Image (cartoon, rainbow, N blue to C red; front, top):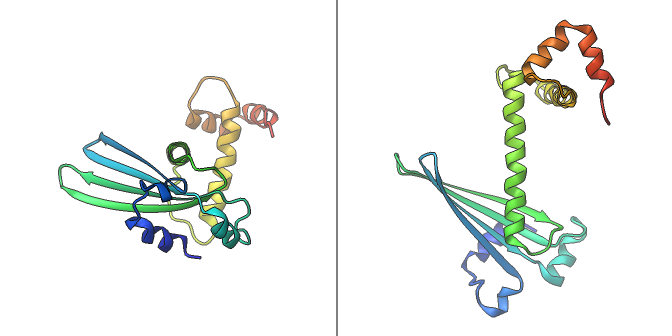
Length: 178
């Protein structure tokens, strides 16, 4: 089943009609900042018995199908961009909570990427084959180990110290909590 196509076809359905209200939910937010107007719409569909039986072979326990539509208007240039992302989840029909969980996930991902880029210069060089994924995994492990140390100092400073000072490196490695 093509979830993306199916949800796009559902665009014309009036979800406020009583017959659909128990299967659909929608949550919309609008944010104005950094010279942009961003509107996010979270459409959540509870598949019902027929759709659940179609999905159960591929996705056990699916409770909701989700589409997040984001429109960004750059105020200065009047440039409009539209992005749609699709999810399936075992969470029930709670559009606000699902929308917030998805935003929270991407916020954490973005902060992790920023930390890796600043501390390890992850975006600075090109890597061939699986090297990018391998280095990313090693950097994430190193970041985890460094963050276990509660002494003052930036991640970059602690990383540099671990490279220069074997005693500090062993202190870090002995603190690993798995």
